[in-house]
Amino acid sequence: MSATRFFLIRHAVVTPAARAVLYGSMDVALCEIALREEAASYRWLARRLPAGAAWATSPLSRARATAEAIFAAGYGRAPLVEEAALVEQNLGEWQGITHEELLARLTRPAHPFWPHGADERPPGGESLADVMARVGPLLERYARRHRGGDVVMVTHGGTIRAALAHAGGLTPQQVLHFSIRNLGLTRLEKVGEDWRVAAVNEEPWTPPA
Image (cartoon, rainbow, N blue to C red; front, side, top):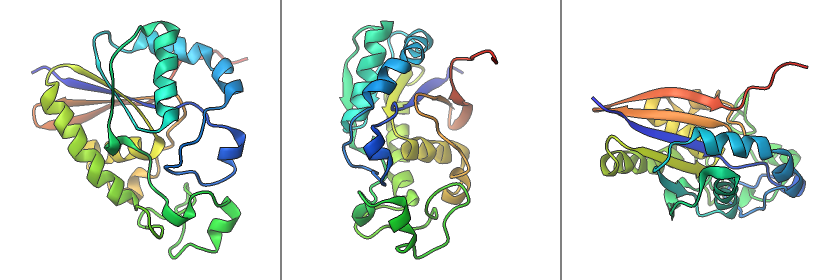
């Protein structure tokens, strides 16, 4: 039985100013210095990703800019479909505040590896479970539409965690144990009615100094 393969890429590093706050679903720019320094990663992705794949991105400019950089690195032009369900977790009233300010606003204990708990829903925003509720149906829709084919999605860390939770039957708390790297490649496969996690944070191998 042939698999429908999903190639999920987290966008490149954003500007230092954006990294200083919780930016969530704010539309922040990529770091120009990082764009130049990560040229080898773009070339690797351009070679690693399958030709003829269907491409989708988050509506946020950092995801589209990352996709465009992969095209320019040698993949070639491909149609890009913007999917609202791929957007990063909306942090509501927390967006734009510093990590220090966040501490006073938490209503639940923070996750050991994340600034806030998996079940925390910021005022006016989303919990991770809310993100999972929109990402899972999108994956299933693409799996039906592109059965036996390849799909590339350029998106965000929270979205990729939600996809891993959907594929692996994980809870929001469990999936926050995954660290999703910028420009790392996560691969999922839908085989029949079942999902398989093929790789998380696949990236070019650099020999030790």
